[in-house]
Length: 493
Ligand code: FAD
Ligand code: NDP
Image (cartoon, rainbow, N blue to C red; front, side, top):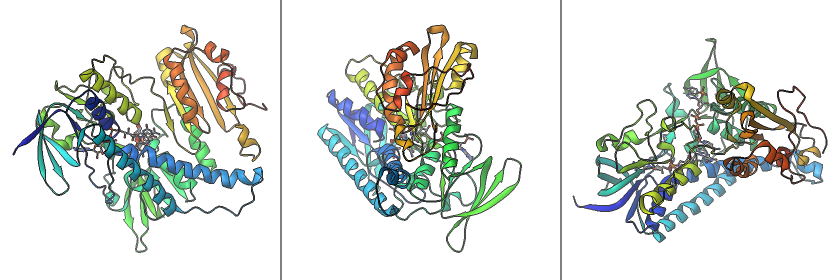
Protein backbone atom coordinates (compact mmCIF):
# COMPACT_ATOMS: atom_id res chain seq x y z
CA UNK A 1 0.00 0.00 0.00
CA UNK A 2 1.30 3.49 -0.88
CA UNK A 3 2.28 5.59 2.09
CA UNK A 4 2.29 9.31 2.84
CA UNK A 5 5.42 10.75 4.44
CA UNK A 6 5.60 13.59 7.00
CA UNK A 7 8.35 15.39 8.85
CA UNK A 8 6.31 14.94 12.04
CA UNK A 9 3.36 12.71 12.79
CA UNK A 10 1.46 13.44 16.00
CA UNK A 11 -0.73 10.71 17.47
CA UNK A 12 -3.55 12.29 19.47
CA UNK A 13 -5.41 15.53 18.80
CA UNK A 14 -5.84 16.63 22.39
CA UNK A 15 -4.24 19.44 24.39
CA UNK A 16 -0.65 18.32 23.79
CA UNK A 17 -0.96 16.96 20.26
CA UNK A 18 -2.73 20.00 18.83
CA UNK A 19 -0.22 22.38 20.43
CA UNK A 20 2.80 20.42 19.19
CA UNK A 21 1.48 19.96 15.67
CA UNK A 22 0.50 23.60 15.13
CA UNK A 23 3.83 24.81 16.53
CA UNK A 24 5.81 22.41 14.32
CA UNK A 25 3.85 23.45 11.21
CA UNK A 26 4.60 27.12 11.99
CA UNK A 27 8.30 26.23 11.63
CA UNK A 28 7.52 25.13 8.05
CA UNK A 29 7.41 21.37 8.67
CA UNK A 30 5.06 18.92 6.94
CA UNK A 31 2.90 17.76 9.86
CA UNK A 32 -0.08 15.44 10.36
CA UNK A 33 -2.25 14.61 13.37
CA UNK A 34 -4.20 11.39 13.87
CA UNK A 35 -7.05 11.68 16.34
CA UNK A 36 -9.69 9.06 16.96
CA UNK A 37 -12.10 8.63 19.86
CA UNK A 38 -13.14 5.09 20.68
CA UNK A 39 -16.67 5.26 22.18
CA UNK A 40 -16.92 4.85 25.96
CA UNK A 41 -18.43 1.64 27.38
CA UNK A 42 -21.73 3.54 27.59
CA UNK A 43 -21.39 4.55 23.93
CA UNK A 44 -20.46 8.23 24.33
CA UNK A 45 -18.18 9.72 21.72
CA UNK A 46 -16.99 13.24 20.77
CA UNK A 47 -15.03 15.42 18.37
CA UNK A 48 -11.53 16.81 17.93
CA UNK A 49 -9.75 18.36 20.90
CA UNK A 50 -9.16 15.49 23.32
CA UNK A 51 -10.13 15.11 26.95
CA UNK A 52 -9.94 18.72 28.13
CA UNK A 53 -12.35 20.15 25.61
CA UNK A 54 -14.82 17.29 25.36
CA UNK A 55 -14.90 15.35 28.62
CA UNK A 56 -12.61 17.23 31.01
CA UNK A 57 -11.71 20.77 32.00
CA UNK A 58 -14.20 22.64 29.82
CA UNK A 59 -17.51 20.87 30.52
CA UNK A 60 -16.40 20.33 34.16
CA UNK A 61 -15.76 24.04 34.76
CA UNK A 62 -19.03 25.01 33.05
CA UNK A 63 -21.02 22.58 35.17
CA UNK A 64 -19.16 23.76 38.26
CA UNK A 65 -20.30 27.26 37.27
CA UNK A 66 -23.89 25.99 37.01
CA UNK A 67 -23.60 24.71 40.57
CA UNK A 68 -22.03 27.95 41.82
CA UNK A 69 -24.84 30.00 40.28
CA UNK A 70 -27.35 27.79 42.08
CA UNK A 71 -25.55 28.34 45.39
CA UNK A 72 -25.66 32.11 44.90
CA UNK A 73 -29.34 32.04 43.94
CA UNK A 74 -30.34 29.75 46.80
CA UNK A 75 -28.07 31.07 49.54
CA UNK A 76 -27.20 34.67 48.78
CA UNK A 77 -29.70 36.32 46.45
CA UNK A 78 -32.51 36.93 48.95
CA UNK A 79 -30.14 38.53 51.47
CA UNK A 80 -29.06 40.97 48.78
CA UNK A 81 -32.65 41.96 48.09
CA UNK A 82 -33.51 39.74 45.15
CA UNK A 83 -37.09 38.54 45.33
CA UNK A 84 -37.60 35.45 43.20
CA UNK A 85 -39.26 32.05 43.38
CA UNK A 86 -37.11 29.14 44.48
CA UNK A 87 -34.80 28.43 41.52
CA UNK A 88 -35.23 25.18 39.60
CA UNK A 89 -32.45 23.63 37.57
CA UNK A 90 -32.94 21.99 34.18
CA UNK A 91 -30.21 19.40 33.49
CA UNK A 92 -31.12 18.99 29.80
CA UNK A 93 -30.76 22.74 29.14
CA UNK A 94 -27.35 22.80 30.83
CA UNK A 95 -26.09 19.76 28.90
CA UNK A 96 -27.39 21.05 25.56
CA UNK A 97 -25.77 24.45 26.01
CA UNK A 98 -22.47 23.01 27.24
CA UNK A 99 -22.41 20.56 24.32
CA UNK A 100 -23.14 23.38 21.85
CA UNK A 101 -20.12 25.25 23.18
CA UNK A 102 -17.98 22.11 22.86
CA UNK A 103 -19.10 21.60 19.24
CA UNK A 104 -18.02 25.15 18.45
CA UNK A 105 -14.60 24.38 19.97
CA UNK A 106 -14.32 21.12 17.95
CA UNK A 107 -15.04 23.13 14.80
CA UNK A 108 -12.48 25.77 15.80
CA UNK A 109 -9.75 23.14 16.27
CA UNK A 110 -10.39 21.63 12.83
CA UNK A 111 -10.22 25.08 11.24
CA UNK A 112 -7.00 25.89 13.09
CA UNK A 113 -5.35 22.70 11.83
CA UNK A 114 -6.36 23.63 8.29
CA UNK A 115 -5.16 27.22 8.54
CA UNK A 116 -1.85 25.99 9.98
CA UNK A 117 -1.45 23.44 7.15
CA UNK A 118 -1.59 20.47 9.51
CA UNK A 119 -3.16 17.42 7.86
CA UNK A 120 -5.86 15.90 10.09
CA UNK A 121 -6.67 12.20 9.96
CA UNK A 122 -9.77 11.27 11.95
CA UNK A 123 -8.29 7.79 12.34
CA UNK A 124 -6.81 5.49 14.98
CA UNK A 125 -3.02 5.15 14.57
CA UNK A 126 -1.10 1.97 15.32
CA UNK A 127 2.67 1.56 14.91
CA UNK A 128 3.75 -1.26 12.63
CA UNK A 129 7.47 -0.43 12.86
CA UNK A 130 9.50 2.46 14.34
CA UNK A 131 8.84 4.74 11.35
CA UNK A 132 5.40 3.61 10.18
CA UNK A 133 1.85 3.78 11.51
CA UNK A 134 -1.38 2.51 10.01
CA UNK A 135 -4.29 4.89 10.51
CA UNK A 136 -7.76 3.32 10.41
CA UNK A 137 -10.84 5.56 10.11
CA UNK A 138 -14.34 4.76 11.37
CA UNK A 139 -15.27 3.09 8.06
CA UNK A 140 -12.25 0.81 8.34
CA UNK A 141 -10.24 2.57 5.61
CA UNK A 142 -6.50 2.19 6.19
CA UNK A 143 -3.83 4.79 5.39
CA UNK A 144 -0.13 4.08 5.84
CA UNK A 145 1.81 7.02 7.24
CA UNK A 146 5.56 7.32 7.66
CA UNK A 147 7.47 10.11 9.36
CA UNK A 148 10.93 11.24 10.40
CA UNK A 149 9.67 11.95 13.92
CA UNK A 150 6.62 11.05 16.00
CA UNK A 151 4.94 12.59 19.02
CA UNK A 152 2.76 10.27 21.08
CA UNK A 153 0.06 12.37 22.77
CA UNK A 154 -2.66 9.78 23.15
CA UNK A 155 -3.85 10.78 26.65
CA UNK A 156 -5.85 8.41 28.82
CA UNK A 157 -9.33 7.09 29.52
CA UNK A 158 -11.22 6.45 32.78
CA UNK A 159 -10.75 3.10 34.49
CA UNK A 160 -13.48 0.72 35.54
CA UNK A 161 -13.26 -1.62 38.51
CA UNK A 162 -13.03 -5.33 37.87
CA UNK A 163 -16.28 -6.12 39.69
CA UNK A 164 -19.53 -7.62 38.38
CA UNK A 165 -21.79 -5.09 36.64
CA UNK A 166 -19.29 -2.23 36.58
CA UNK A 167 -18.89 -1.75 32.83
CA UNK A 168 -22.54 -2.63 32.15
CA UNK A 169 -24.23 -0.34 34.65
CA UNK A 170 -21.83 2.48 35.57
CA UNK A 171 -20.76 5.59 33.75
CA UNK A 172 -17.54 7.63 33.94
CA UNK A 173 -16.46 11.22 33.33
CA UNK A 174 -16.48 10.28 29.62
CA UNK A 175 -20.28 10.12 29.82
CA UNK A 176 -21.54 12.48 32.52
CA UNK A 177 -21.13 15.74 30.60
CA UNK A 178 -23.33 14.54 27.74
CA UNK A 179 -25.95 12.64 29.78
CA UNK A 180 -29.23 13.40 28.05
CA UNK A 181 -31.28 12.89 31.22
CA UNK A 182 -30.63 14.11 34.75
CA UNK A 183 -28.44 11.79 36.87
CA UNK A 184 -30.82 11.62 39.85
CA UNK A 185 -29.49 10.08 43.07
CA UNK A 186 -25.81 9.52 42.33
CA UNK A 187 -22.96 7.48 43.77
CA UNK A 188 -19.48 8.68 42.83
CA UNK A 189 -16.77 6.07 43.46
CA UNK A 190 -13.28 7.53 44.12
CA UNK A 191 -12.06 10.58 46.00
CA UNK A 192 -9.62 12.36 43.76
CA UNK A 193 -9.86 15.38 41.42
CA UNK A 194 -12.43 13.88 39.03
CA UNK A 195 -14.54 12.27 41.75
CA UNK A 196 -14.84 15.28 44.03
CA UNK A 197 -15.38 17.75 41.19
CA UNK A 198 -18.14 15.62 39.62
CA UNK A 199 -19.77 15.00 43.00
CA UNK A 200 -19.63 18.75 43.64
CA UNK A 201 -21.46 19.86 40.52
CA UNK A 202 -23.99 16.99 40.50
CA UNK A 203 -24.96 17.86 44.07
CA UNK A 204 -24.77 21.56 43.29
CA UNK A 205 -27.41 21.34 40.57
CA UNK A 206 -29.76 19.54 42.91
CA UNK A 207 -29.16 15.79 43.15
CA UNK A 208 -28.57 13.65 46.22
CA UNK A 209 -24.92 12.67 45.95
CA UNK A 210 -22.79 10.12 47.79
CA UNK A 211 -19.02 9.71 47.49
CA UNK A 212 -17.46 6.30 48.16
CA UNK A 213 -13.90 6.78 49.34
CA UNK A 214 -11.60 3.84 50.02
CA UNK A 215 -8.82 5.78 51.80
CA UNK A 216 -8.09 9.53 51.78
CA UNK A 217 -9.40 12.44 49.74
CA UNK A 218 -7.14 13.92 47.03
CA UNK A 219 -4.16 11.62 47.46
CA UNK A 220 -0.91 13.47 46.85
CA UNK A 221 -2.33 16.85 47.82
CA UNK A 222 -1.82 18.68 51.10
CA UNK A 223 -4.05 16.64 53.41
CA UNK A 224 -5.11 19.55 55.61
CA UNK A 225 -6.51 21.25 52.50
CA UNK A 226 -8.05 17.98 51.24
CA UNK A 227 -9.81 17.46 54.59
CA UNK A 228 -11.00 21.07 54.52
CA UNK A 229 -12.68 20.41 51.15
CA UNK A 230 -14.20 17.14 52.33
CA UNK A 231 -15.63 18.74 55.50
CA UNK A 232 -17.07 21.63 53.46
CA UNK A 233 -18.71 19.18 51.03
CA UNK A 234 -20.15 17.16 53.93
CA UNK A 235 -21.50 20.29 55.61
CA UNK A 236 -23.20 21.15 52.34
CA UNK A 237 -25.01 17.82 52.14
CA UNK A 238 -22.74 15.42 50.23
CA UNK A 239 -22.59 12.06 51.98
CA UNK A 240 -19.17 10.36 52.24
CA UNK A 241 -19.12 6.57 52.58
CA UNK A 242 -15.64 6.14 54.02
CA UNK A 243 -13.26 3.19 54.00
CA UNK A 244 -15.36 1.33 51.46
CA UNK A 245 -15.07 -0.20 47.97
CA UNK A 246 -17.89 -1.44 45.75
CA UNK A 247 -18.03 -5.19 45.15
CA UNK A 248 -20.87 -5.47 42.61
CA UNK A 249 -23.44 -3.41 40.74
CA UNK A 250 -26.77 -4.90 39.70
CA UNK A 251 -29.67 -3.55 37.71
CA UNK A 252 -33.01 -3.66 39.57
CA UNK A 253 -36.31 -4.33 37.76
CA UNK A 254 -37.12 -0.61 38.08
CA UNK A 255 -33.88 0.35 36.29
CA UNK A 256 -31.96 1.49 39.38
CA UNK A 257 -28.41 0.42 40.15
CA UNK A 258 -28.09 -1.66 43.29
CA UNK A 259 -24.54 -1.20 44.59
CA UNK A 260 -23.06 -3.54 47.19
CA UNK A 261 -19.89 -2.49 48.95
CA UNK A 262 -17.44 -3.76 51.54
CA UNK A 263 -16.08 -1.67 54.40
CA UNK A 264 -12.49 -1.97 55.60
CA UNK A 265 -13.71 -3.93 58.65
CA UNK A 266 -15.23 -6.61 56.40
CA UNK A 267 -18.87 -5.57 56.84
CA UNK A 268 -20.98 -5.04 53.73
CA UNK A 269 -23.86 -2.77 52.81
CA UNK A 270 -25.87 -1.87 49.74
CA UNK A 271 -28.07 0.91 48.36
CA UNK A 272 -29.89 1.85 45.18
CA UNK A 273 -28.83 4.72 42.93
CA UNK A 274 -30.05 6.21 39.66
CA UNK A 275 -26.48 6.79 38.49
CA UNK A 276 -23.14 5.30 39.51
CA UNK A 277 -20.11 7.25 38.33
CA UNK A 278 -16.72 5.53 38.47
CA UNK A 279 -13.89 8.00 39.09
CA UNK A 280 -11.15 5.59 40.12
CA UNK A 281 -8.32 6.94 38.03
CA UNK A 282 -7.31 6.82 34.39
CA UNK A 283 -5.50 4.35 32.15
CA UNK A 284 -3.16 5.57 29.46
CA UNK A 285 -3.42 3.65 26.22
CA UNK A 286 -0.08 3.47 24.36
CA UNK A 287 -0.09 -0.30 24.84
CA UNK A 288 -3.08 -0.51 22.48
CA UNK A 289 -1.36 1.36 19.67
CA UNK A 290 1.56 -0.95 19.00
CA UNK A 291 4.32 1.07 20.66
CA UNK A 292 6.14 -2.24 21.21
CA UNK A 293 6.44 -2.55 17.40
CA UNK A 294 8.24 0.80 17.48
CA UNK A 295 10.45 -0.33 20.36
CA UNK A 296 9.08 2.29 22.78
CA UNK A 297 9.52 1.23 26.41
CA UNK A 298 6.57 1.64 28.79
CA UNK A 299 6.43 1.41 32.56
CA UNK A 300 4.92 -2.09 33.01
CA UNK A 301 3.05 -0.99 36.16
CA UNK A 302 1.37 2.20 34.95
CA UNK A 303 1.54 1.72 31.16
CA UNK A 304 3.04 5.21 30.97
CA UNK A 305 6.02 6.18 28.82
CA UNK A 306 9.23 7.28 30.55
CA UNK A 307 10.80 10.30 28.81
CA UNK A 308 13.85 12.52 29.09
CA UNK A 309 13.16 15.98 27.67
CA UNK A 310 10.01 14.42 26.16
CA UNK A 311 12.11 11.88 24.20
CA UNK A 312 11.26 8.20 24.67
CA UNK A 313 13.96 5.52 24.57
CA UNK A 314 13.62 5.61 20.75
CA UNK A 315 15.63 8.48 19.26
CA UNK A 316 12.93 9.93 16.94
CA UNK A 317 9.82 9.18 19.05
CA UNK A 318 8.64 11.69 21.65
CA UNK A 319 5.78 11.68 24.15
CA UNK A 320 3.88 14.50 25.86
CA UNK A 321 0.82 15.01 28.05
CA UNK A 322 -0.99 12.47 30.21
CA UNK A 323 0.87 9.53 28.66
CA UNK A 324 4.29 10.44 30.10
CA UNK A 325 5.51 8.83 33.28
CA UNK A 326 5.71 11.57 35.92
CA UNK A 327 7.37 9.15 38.34
CA UNK A 328 10.28 8.69 35.92
CA UNK A 329 10.98 12.43 35.64
CA UNK A 330 13.95 13.77 37.54
CA UNK A 331 12.80 14.79 40.13
CA UNK A 332 9.43 12.99 39.87
CA UNK A 333 6.27 15.07 39.37
CA UNK A 334 2.69 14.14 40.20
CA UNK A 335 1.28 17.10 38.24
CA UNK A 336 1.85 15.91 34.70
CA UNK A 337 -1.80 15.20 33.88
CA UNK A 338 -2.94 18.76 33.27
CA UNK A 339 -3.87 20.56 30.06
CA UNK A 340 -1.42 23.47 30.32
CA UNK A 341 1.41 21.03 31.08
CA UNK A 342 0.66 19.07 27.88
CA UNK A 343 0.42 22.30 25.84
CA UNK A 344 3.62 23.81 27.21
CA UNK A 345 5.57 20.56 26.71
CA UNK A 346 4.29 20.29 23.12
CA UNK A 347 5.15 23.87 22.17
CA UNK A 348 8.62 23.73 23.72
CA UNK A 349 9.34 20.38 22.08
CA UNK A 350 8.43 21.74 18.63
CA UNK A 351 10.62 24.81 19.25
CA UNK A 352 13.58 22.60 20.21
CA UNK A 353 13.07 20.20 17.28
CA UNK A 354 12.52 22.76 14.54
CA UNK A 355 13.02 26.30 15.79
CA UNK A 356 16.46 26.22 17.41
CA UNK A 357 14.89 26.45 20.87
CA UNK A 358 16.70 25.27 23.96
CA UNK A 359 14.11 25.73 26.71
CA UNK A 360 13.15 22.55 28.53
CA UNK A 361 9.74 21.86 30.02
CA UNK A 362 9.70 22.52 33.76
CA UNK A 363 7.38 19.98 35.37
CA UNK A 364 7.87 21.57 38.78
CA UNK A 365 6.18 24.59 40.28
CA UNK A 366 3.05 23.69 38.30
CA UNK A 367 0.00 25.40 39.83
CA UNK A 368 -3.36 23.65 39.87
CA UNK A 369 -6.91 24.11 41.08
CA UNK A 370 -9.52 21.61 42.17
CA UNK A 371 -13.00 22.87 41.25
CA UNK A 372 -14.85 21.47 44.23
CA UNK A 373 -17.80 23.36 45.82
CA UNK A 374 -15.15 25.27 47.73
CA UNK A 375 -12.31 25.66 45.24
CA UNK A 376 -8.74 24.79 46.13
CA UNK A 377 -5.72 26.31 44.44
CA UNK A 378 -2.11 25.44 45.14
CA UNK A 379 1.41 25.77 43.87
CA UNK A 380 4.61 24.23 45.22
CA UNK A 381 4.93 21.69 47.99
CA UNK A 382 2.24 20.26 50.24
CA UNK A 383 2.93 20.68 53.96
CA UNK A 384 3.75 16.97 54.20
CA UNK A 385 6.22 17.18 51.29
CA UNK A 386 7.77 20.40 52.63
CA UNK A 387 8.29 18.79 56.05
CA UNK A 388 9.88 15.75 54.43
CA UNK A 389 12.11 17.87 52.18
CA UNK A 390 13.19 20.56 54.68
CA UNK A 391 12.67 18.98 58.10
CA UNK A 392 9.88 20.23 60.38
CA UNK A 393 12.28 22.55 62.23
CA UNK A 394 13.16 24.41 59.02
CA UNK A 395 9.60 24.95 57.88
CA UNK A 396 7.50 27.97 58.90
CA UNK A 397 3.79 27.74 58.11
CA UNK A 398 1.82 31.01 58.06
CA UNK A 399 -1.92 30.58 57.91
CA UNK A 400 -5.32 32.12 58.34
CA UNK A 401 -8.97 31.19 58.15
CA UNK A 402 -11.08 33.89 56.53
CA UNK A 403 -14.60 34.83 55.49
CA UNK A 404 -15.11 36.34 52.04
CA UNK A 405 -16.82 39.73 52.41
CA UNK A 406 -19.50 38.61 49.95
CA UNK A 407 -20.41 35.73 52.28
CA UNK A 408 -21.05 37.94 55.34
CA UNK A 409 -24.39 39.47 54.33
CA UNK A 410 -26.01 36.10 53.51
CA UNK A 411 -24.35 34.51 56.59
CA UNK A 412 -22.74 31.67 54.65
CA UNK A 413 -20.68 30.78 57.69
CA UNK A 414 -17.60 32.33 59.22
CA UNK A 415 -14.01 31.27 58.65
CA UNK A 416 -14.92 28.61 56.08
CA UNK A 417 -12.03 29.60 53.82
CA UNK A 418 -8.36 29.01 54.53
CA UNK A 419 -4.98 30.14 53.23
CA UNK A 420 -1.46 29.04 54.10
CA UNK A 421 2.05 29.83 53.01
CA UNK A 422 4.95 27.42 53.54
CA UNK A 423 8.37 28.99 53.98
CA UNK A 424 11.91 27.60 54.11
CA UNK A 425 13.54 29.19 57.19
CA UNK A 426 17.02 28.24 56.00
CA UNK A 427 16.62 30.33 52.81
CA UNK A 428 15.30 33.62 54.18
CA UNK A 429 11.72 32.31 54.28
CA UNK A 430 11.67 31.38 50.61
CA UNK A 431 8.07 30.46 49.81
CA UNK A 432 7.96 26.77 48.88
CA UNK A 433 4.21 26.21 48.91
CA UNK A 434 1.01 28.26 48.69
CA UNK A 435 -2.46 26.87 49.34
CA UNK A 436 -5.88 28.47 49.35
CA UNK A 437 -9.43 27.19 49.74
CA UNK A 438 -11.99 29.79 48.74
CA UNK A 439 -13.99 31.27 45.88
CA UNK A 440 -12.12 31.64 42.57
CA UNK A 441 -9.06 29.85 43.93
CA UNK A 442 -7.77 29.25 40.40
CA UNK A 443 -7.84 32.95 39.59
CA UNK A 444 -6.05 33.68 42.88
CA UNK A 445 -3.33 31.07 42.46
CA UNK A 446 -2.12 31.70 38.90
CA UNK A 447 -0.27 34.95 39.66
CA UNK A 448 1.38 33.52 42.75
CA UNK A 449 2.81 30.73 40.59
CA UNK A 450 4.78 33.45 38.78
CA UNK A 451 5.93 34.86 42.11
CA UNK A 452 7.15 31.46 43.28
CA UNK A 453 9.01 30.95 39.97
CA UNK A 454 10.72 34.27 40.65
CA UNK A 455 11.83 33.07 44.08
CA UNK A 456 9.42 35.10 46.23
CA UNK A 457 10.06 35.16 49.98
CA UNK A 458 7.67 35.88 52.85
CA UNK A 459 9.17 39.40 52.96
CA UNK A 460 8.10 39.96 49.33
CA UNK A 461 4.56 38.96 50.24
CA UNK A 462 4.62 41.27 53.30
CA UNK A 463 5.87 44.25 51.30
CA UNK A 464 3.23 43.78 48.60
CA UNK A 465 0.21 46.06 49.02
CA UNK A 466 -3.05 44.13 49.07
CA UNK A 467 -6.12 44.82 46.97
CA UNK A 468 -9.01 45.55 49.29
CA UNK A 469 -11.51 44.05 49.71
CA UNK A 470 -10.48 40.79 48.11
CA UNK A 471 -9.94 37.28 49.43
CA UNK A 472 -6.48 37.02 48.02
CA UNK A 473 -5.18 39.98 50.04
CA UNK A 474 -4.92 37.44 52.89
CA UNK A 475 -1.50 36.54 51.52
CA UNK A 476 -0.14 40.04 52.08
CA UNK A 477 -1.09 40.14 55.76
CA UNK A 478 -0.25 36.66 57.07
CA UNK A 479 1.26 36.92 60.53
CA UNK A 480 0.18 33.84 62.50
CA UNK A 481 2.43 30.81 62.34
CA UNK A 482 1.20 27.29 63.00
CA UNK A 483 4.08 26.80 65.41
CA UNK A 484 2.81 29.69 67.59
CA UNK A 485 -0.39 27.79 68.35
CA UNK A 486 -2.32 31.08 68.13
CA UNK A 487 -5.82 30.78 66.66
CA UNK A 488 -5.81 31.47 62.91
CA UNK A 489 -9.49 32.42 62.83
CA UNK A 490 -9.99 35.97 61.64
CA UNK A 491 -12.54 38.58 62.69
CA UNK A 492 -13.64 41.75 60.93
CA UNK A 493 -11.97 43.69 58.17
P1 FAD B 1 -5.91 14.09 25.54
O1 FAD B 1 -6.43 15.47 25.65
O2 FAD B 1 -6.61 13.03 26.30
O3 FAD B 1 -5.95 13.74 23.98
C1 FAD B 1 -5.57 12.49 23.47
C2 FAD B 1 -6.33 12.24 22.17
O4 FAD B 1 -5.72 11.16 21.46
C3 FAD B 1 -7.77 11.80 22.41
O5 FAD B 1 -8.64 12.48 21.52
C4 FAD B 1 -7.74 10.29 22.08
O6 FAD B 1 -8.99 9.82 21.67
C5 FAD B 1 -6.72 10.27 20.98
N1 FAD B 1 -6.05 8.98 20.75
C6 FAD B 1 -5.62 8.08 21.66
N2 FAD B 1 -4.99 7.06 21.05
C7 FAD B 1 -5.02 7.34 19.73
C8 FAD B 1 -4.53 6.67 18.57
N3 FAD B 1 -3.85 5.52 18.67
N4 FAD B 1 -4.76 7.20 17.36
C9 FAD B 1 -5.43 8.37 17.23
N5 FAD B 1 -5.92 9.04 18.28
C10 FAD B 1 -5.71 8.54 19.51
N6 FAD B 1 -6.66 19.52 33.44
C11 FAD B 1 -6.53 20.82 33.78
O7 FAD B 1 -5.48 21.42 33.55
N7 FAD B 1 -7.56 21.50 34.37
C12 FAD B 1 -8.74 20.92 34.63
O8 FAD B 1 -9.64 21.56 35.17
C13 FAD B 1 -8.91 19.56 34.27
N8 FAD B 1 -10.09 18.95 34.48
C14 FAD B 1 -10.24 17.66 34.10
C15 FAD B 1 -11.47 17.05 34.33
C16 FAD B 1 -11.68 15.75 33.98
C17 FAD B 1 -13.02 15.11 34.22
C18 FAD B 1 -10.62 15.01 33.37
C19 FAD B 1 -10.84 13.59 32.96
C20 FAD B 1 -9.40 15.60 33.14
C21 FAD B 1 -9.19 16.94 33.50
N9 FAD B 1 -7.98 17.58 33.30
C22 FAD B 1 -7.82 18.88 33.67
C23 FAD B 1 -6.83 16.87 32.69
C24 FAD B 1 -6.69 17.23 31.18
O9 FAD B 1 -7.92 17.05 30.52
C25 FAD B 1 -5.62 16.34 30.56
O10 FAD B 1 -4.44 16.46 31.31
C26 FAD B 1 -5.31 16.73 29.11
O11 FAD B 1 -6.45 16.69 28.31
C27 FAD B 1 -4.25 15.77 28.55
O12 FAD B 1 -3.95 16.12 27.22
P2 FAD B 1 -3.25 15.05 26.27
O13 FAD B 1 -2.89 15.80 25.03
O14 FAD B 1 -2.22 14.30 26.96
O15 FAD B 1 -4.38 13.98 25.92
P1 NDP C 1 -6.49 9.71 40.45
O1 NDP C 1 -5.65 8.60 40.00
O2 NDP C 1 -5.85 10.97 40.89
O3 NDP C 1 -7.44 9.21 41.65
C1 NDP C 1 -8.09 7.97 41.61
C2 NDP C 1 -9.07 7.86 42.78
O4 NDP C 1 -9.75 6.60 42.67
C3 NDP C 1 -8.42 7.88 44.15
O5 NDP C 1 -9.29 8.50 45.06
C4 NDP C 1 -8.24 6.39 44.47
O6 NDP C 1 -8.23 6.09 45.84
C5 NDP C 1 -9.53 5.82 43.85
N1 NDP C 1 -9.38 4.42 43.49
C6 NDP C 1 -8.44 3.89 42.69
N2 NDP C 1 -8.63 2.55 42.59
C7 NDP C 1 -9.71 2.25 43.35
C8 NDP C 1 -10.38 1.03 43.66
N3 NDP C 1 -9.98 -0.13 43.16
N4 NDP C 1 -11.46 1.09 44.46
C9 NDP C 1 -11.87 2.27 44.98
N5 NDP C 1 -11.25 3.46 44.74
C10 NDP C 1 -10.19 3.44 43.93
O7 NDP C 1 -7.48 9.98 39.25
P2 NDP C 1 -8.43 11.11 38.73
O8 NDP C 1 -9.16 10.41 37.65
O9 NDP C 1 -9.24 11.78 39.75
O10 NDP C 1 -7.48 12.21 38.08
C11 NDP C 1 -6.57 11.89 37.05
C12 NDP C 1 -5.77 13.12 36.70
O11 NDP C 1 -6.57 14.01 35.92
C13 NDP C 1 -5.33 13.93 37.91
O12 NDP C 1 -4.10 13.47 38.41
C14 NDP C 1 -5.23 15.33 37.35
O13 NDP C 1 -3.92 15.60 36.92
C15 NDP C 1 -6.19 15.35 36.17
N6 NDP C 1 -7.37 16.18 36.53
C16 NDP C 1 -7.19 17.51 36.77
C17 NDP C 1 -8.24 18.29 37.18
C18 NDP C 1 -8.02 19.74 37.48
O14 NDP C 1 -7.01 20.28 37.10
N7 NDP C 1 -8.95 20.41 38.16
C19 NDP C 1 -9.58 17.72 37.38
C20 NDP C 1 -9.65 16.32 37.11
C21 NDP C 1 -8.57 15.59 36.71
P3 NDP C 1 -6.85 5.94 46.70
O15 NDP C 1 -6.44 7.34 47.07
O16 NDP C 1 -7.26 5.11 47.85
O17 NDP C 1 -5.84 5.28 45.80
